[in-house]
Amino acid sequence: MISQVAGKITKSIGDISRARFFLPKPCLKTLYYCLVYPYLHYCIIVWESTPKTNLRRLVSLEKRVIRIISKSTFDSNSDPIFKELEPLKLSDVRQLELGKLCFFFNRSLLPSKFNNYFSLNPLKQVHSYASRYANDFHLPFCRTNLRKCSVSFQGPTFYNSLENDIKESNSLHSFKSKLTKKDSYELLA
Image (cartoon, rainbow, N blue to C red; front, side, top):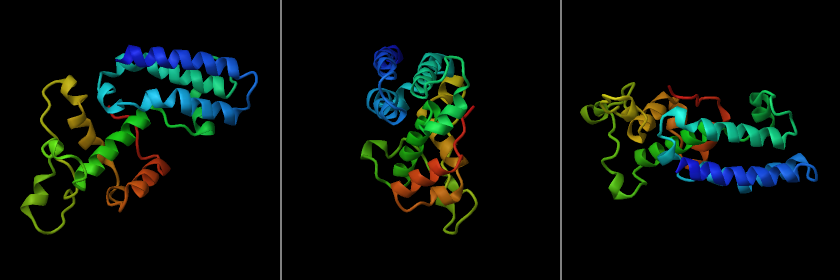
């Protein structure tokens, strides 16, 4: 699946590369959000749970298209370009989607098939009063590194690392804006 996504992105990068001579940066950024971003975003929770070594091609393609949009050289540092253009990196998009999945689960907004996918911390079920970890998810036991890459482990790990202010958001919109406003999501090891 990653090779199919990479193939689609490569074709789109060619189109954006040809258009960079005629279009200004805002139009190229719009092309990025129309031609590349949907492929990076589509089912990211499923295919990005692969080990990080398998994602190198997608990360390099993402950096390449960002350099093309900013009309930078092929070897320039991509971090300042990401800050200037303000798109979310691939890892940030995944963490945003993991956070949204846990947010929906915590508020019982997912279909009933997901009722047993995560489990809340047992402290919430033991006490009627609030404790420090009452809003956290229980982390499943992981014997292998492959299991640590799974959504059922990465989602709760990321959600538990968030500040309580973000976790207690009233709506999805406020959750997303607080999450993207702060530099609170970092690449999980």
